[in-house]
Length: 218
Picture 1 (cartoon, rainbow, N blue to C red):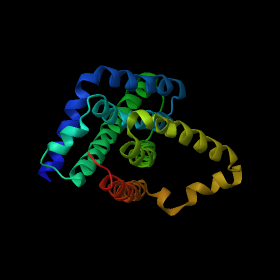
Picture 2 (cartoon, one colour):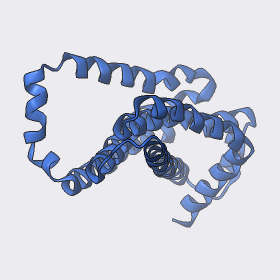
Picture 3 (tube, rainbow, N blue to C red):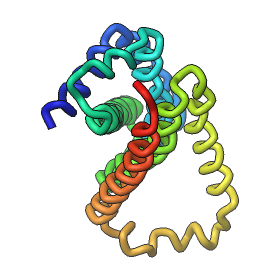
Picture 4 (tube, one colour):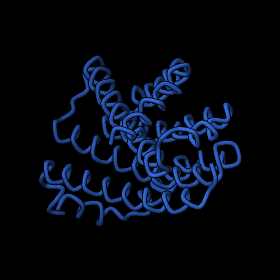
């Protein structure tokens, strides 16, 4: 576990010089949040945008040829993979907190009402989308790198488009039935189920990535 923490710290140190660029990425969702005036849409968009930054650590490591460094460090390939996934999860938690706080501030400033239930649903759905998008992206970045695999960065955009298409395709009658789903009537249960799904999705993705990475030379 100590080696995993060291890998997380290494990723944090890699990102620090690019913190200003990340702040700009954080500012983009604010425009949508201000425009939609809806906490759920705002947080979902924020998390989708943040999922696109999952290539940053790979890009920095690739530009500085850090794969050789990883080969010299007293860490295993499992430590490297686990550390990168934990760093991604940590980034997701920070992003969703930022998204919620900014939504609350903007909605309060514009005097738009929102509920505790809306906030919990926003966090749950936002984290699930972020988890799903990054779980698909990370194996590709480990396999191809940030430069060859740069097309993977567009997965969140494609995902958001598909979600929009599916949402538009749902009939009004079926939309009215959604609130009747038991887990949606209890936001605490919905949140717990979403976190469990996040863990399962990341677990499956990490296991797949580990098999890919084990067969690669550092």
